[in-house]
Length: 85
Image (cartoon, rainbow, N blue to C red; front, side):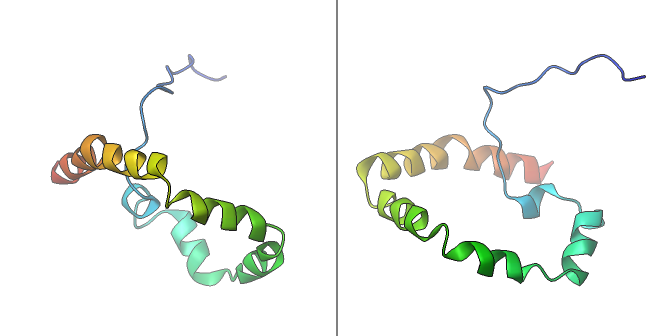
């Protein structure tokens, strides 16, 4: 039987990269070292080319620059603090 539902904090941003979050001895890291999934990128590259072009274009816009500044002020200090613990 499952335990009680855990509260979800969907309003809080997730800080850090997968490299920071996934433990070194996690099974996904072992799979990544032996499983070659380059075919997935090759198979999806053409399908998502237009989308990627649109995303890359967004990075040059003012809303994107504002989001990056906000991330530097709000998220990156939290990541640094978590690493210190």
